[in-house]
Length: 157
Image (cartoon, rainbow, N blue to C red):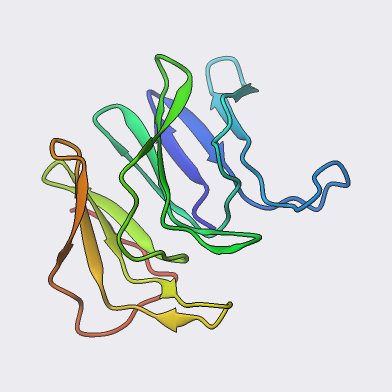
């Protein structure tokens, strides 16, 4: 899963799955932050939804967690973490629920690329790409890729 991101010189481990007996369904909403200066992890505010196979990116000093999967199926929900407030907030959901996809920031906007979508756990690979503009607070479709891609990575160079 895509469950790690760096923000303000610290590493964030977000969501994922645990086989711990204390977690009933295994899908984690918890978040931990690693500070390399102190060489220590600390718990920070949890997400509203436990998720795996989601994508994350940092934009304008905030951490976005998009889509993924939980015990009920694929997610279209998007949460944004503000480290100054130590709080998550819901933002506009992605149009196409997806998991195992790539996400990157380009021109001040999030881009969600490919992944899986489907109902009742029938996974359908995607070639679609969606873009989130934080100034508008909405997702929109952009040109799809020529090929479907799952478990890919997107990098700005």
